[in-house]
Image 1 (cartoon, rainbow, N blue to C red):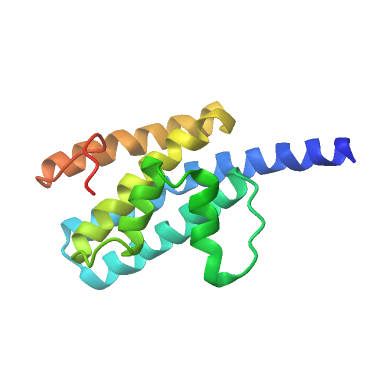
Image 2: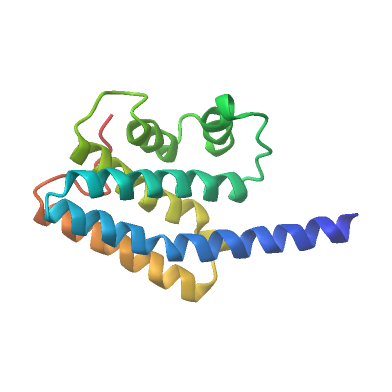
Length: 155
């Protein structure tokens, strides 16, 4: 049984690593639709990123979801209720405030950055390189767009 758990843990780490790297594409899509002022597309890609990042942390922390109504709560508890990731998750999901769409997208981008930090210990180097590049692109883009960078948590 222990051997099975180790295999499952390795597969989970590989999944998290690959997904975080692949989600860099969603980061680019958010920044692109944001700059085009395409609100419908921005809403769609932001939602996709939020759901995917939540799933990544579900796998990263080995959360067995009891039911849909407690899904976010369970993941936030696993990551840590006082963590930066959870703060961004609450902002990105709109549970903390009724933010405008661009603010919601910005919080989803910050959530990606925090996900990279938390997933980093289990990520393969090639995947990490892609994810870290996306983090830098987010910082640069948010500066260009005249908004806060990843070091500025907005609660």
